[in-house]
Each structure stands twice: as C-alpha cells, then as structure tokens.
Image 1: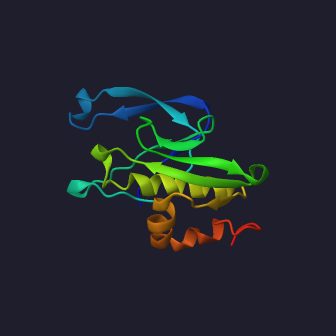
Image 2: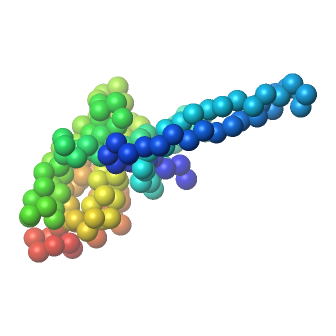
Length: 153
C-alpha cells in the first residue's frame, strides 16, 4: 500500500544515494550520486490509486502556525481550531481546488489530521461537513478519536 508522508517542522537531513545505471554493460556503468532531503515523516496509511496502475501519493504537511494540514503546494487543506485547553482539534473546513478534486486529497488530509490527533492523544470534533458526512462514514475506524463532550467516544 502506498503511503503519503506528513512532514513535521523544518527538521531534515541530507542523504546521499549511489545508483548504478543498469542500461549499459558493466564496463560502461557509472555510479550516479542522488542527493535527497529526508524529513521527519508520518504515514497516513491511506492510498490513492492513479491512472495507469501507478499510485499517486500526496505529501501532507502539518502547518501548526496556520492550524491546518495541507498539501506541499498549500492548495488543498483541512483547517482546525484547538479547543478544550489544547486537547481537542475541531476540524472546521476542508478545501480542495476544483483542479485537484477526485484524487482523494480530502481523505488524505483527514487521515493525516486523525493520525496526528491519535498519536498525540487528542480528540477530534468533526464540524466540517466533509469530515462528518463523508470521511467518517467511509472510515468508521477513526470514530474512536471523535470527541463526545467528555473526551473520546
């Protein structure tokens, strides 16, 4: 299952990978250096299947300052308000631009928010109609994180 990643903060480190090109005979092979940035990540355990059998996996970023989970390009997001002395996340709005609808981004955003809440012992109030009317009915396993007025259900 393909898993999107959720970045936290600005912590990252450089990793250098050496790739051997297999398109040439061994006498002509050259090692290529590929430098990538690895950022602290958290899997959302959700998949998005793209066309052609390949899987398209968005990266979801937690933007604590803006109180939202968003795609790297900041175009799609789920906003929240902190309640109950910081123990509850009220998911108030989910937005995906029309050009990116139908790709499962809203679901990925919700999974990232619910995973974050679960891993930090927070509860979630699903004020946003997408969260309460679409995401939760399709993903009932996340009901354990939903706030019931006295804590989690």
